[in-house]
Image (cartoon, rainbow, N blue to C red; front, side, top):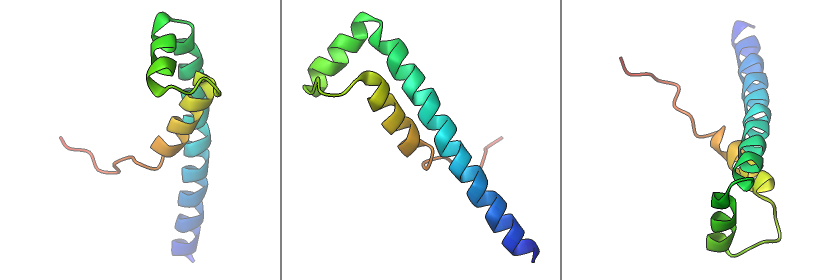
Length: 73
């Protein structure tokens, strides 16, 4: 029973981690779009159909799944 609870709690934490990372990525993308760097990024990617906030949200969501659970001291 404890294993099931641990798996459910882990899944819920992973879900909320992905949501929070998406929000932080969207905010970061929006903040970068206010600077001249935002125009350069859109020029390099050569796709002005999406905003940098959308790109940041996508990268934040994907990045939430690529985290190390181990720390080195």
